[in-house]
Image (cartoon, rainbow, N blue to C red; front, side, top):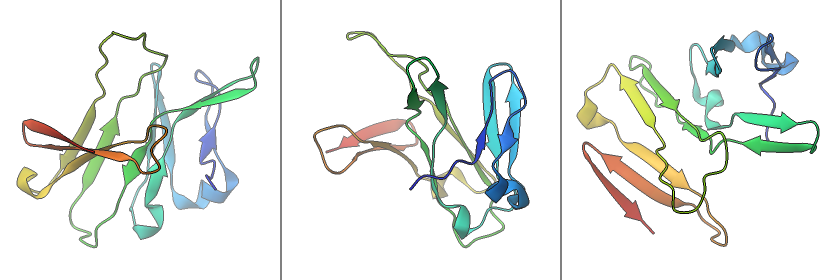
Amino acid sequence: MPQKVAQGFTYEEIKISPEFQQSGFKIETIDKSISLTIPQVNKEHEGLYYCGKFNHEKVAVKLSDGALLTVTDDIDVKVSVFQSSVSDSVPAGASVTLQCSVLSESRAAELQVLWFRAAPPQSHPQIIYTHHNSSHQYP
């Protein structure tokens, strides 16, 4: 069951949920972007993180594709993952670019960037794997 980390309105203060207040999670709003910072990451922070918006008129929630956070046992390596999202529907035939930036203190050769895509009617997500300047799609 997903846990709500924070909530608020885009142009107002975003509040961390009570169960995460002691964790040190930080929310920052810059322009129309809202970022979540998790200090001193550990294995308990692993999971799929989503950003979403709630439409009060339609009583509906729209979630981003999510950002997968995995934590290695090497506490000396600092890795940041930034994911852009598509805010609205994209018409058929249009192009869309999804960006994921991985910043690390370790050598780039040691990192793998994985994109996951879950699409009905498949029961398992497809994996899109990007390494260096090439990309491959695995069914």
